[in-house]
Length: 448
Image (cartoon, rainbow, N blue to C red; front, side, top):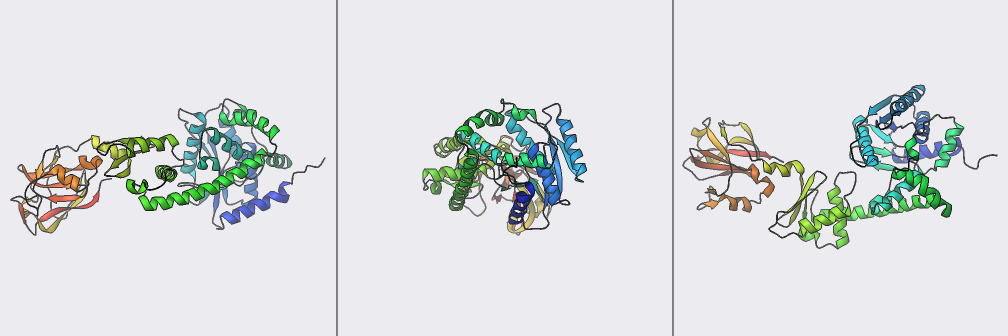
């Protein structure tokens, strides 16, 4: 009995070529095929090798979680050899935690490590994979982005991903594999319902499909609609970001003029930054309640995914973990001897010794000077101002962030304050060592 499914040669080669030309018209594009040895990726490997024989290579990721995983890698390598394709077999270490999530993280890290700048990563996800992803994201409480699931063309910071099978059913793929006698391996974990995706596929899917036979296509359509909605929300969030700040800070007065849903969307996009995934709703709400809504004199800070989020003078800042924690280590006292045009690196940044209209005496060059960390309670008589001023007040007036104040160092000679090194530059103090056309350290760039 003749199958009602179209044959591979009748339909899919034309679809694949059309998709490629619409997405990447450049003739210079090359492909890295992620091949697990399973049915879907082996069909993809064979088709791509037939269509673009000189522009592809393959990569097999050995997660080292199953005893036969090394032999599966050898199977993929030998199949690639038959097709005259280069194949990378990459071993990864999967960290503790949710096994599926950690395996995915390790896999994508390996992709980023091995992909060439002119290559596109090609994945064999199909329509049922897409529908399963939507269901799993729905069960985990995802928003519009999560329900958008996977995209055919998915440009990321370090990867450009293409999923040419995404609109094709598993039945089509299975038939084409049989028609072309393509060998493949079967991973037993695909049927282990201990894992969420396998449970969804083996237990939930048949039940739902018995009631809703067109469920797969319907869920795929929903994901496309969610992708449109996500793009619209992203455009609005970009407009709001331009209004309220930039990638590193948000003006809270402007942010709070937006409706609460737009505030949440903007914060979610802003926190995500260049990461692959958005933060959870709970994380966004914690930043709203614990940081934004904290008392004005509170120094609340919330850590998430390598950054600290904190408020200073009605602005919300996103600060790297390394920069924020650096304040716990004050610079040690040191002795310094400088000469003209010398570049020196201090806690606050890099400075250059230059002649200025007013500065320090030339007699101090190449003489031992003390550089001491600020300890609190110091007073400074800033050059050009009347009277002494608490250094703390000068720092506040200059709006130096609290998490950068550990970088401040005092330059002195025989216990006479000559000036202060800060992330905003060198502040010259009034002293008997000042003169016209003297020298000063000029800030070249601040320490992050």
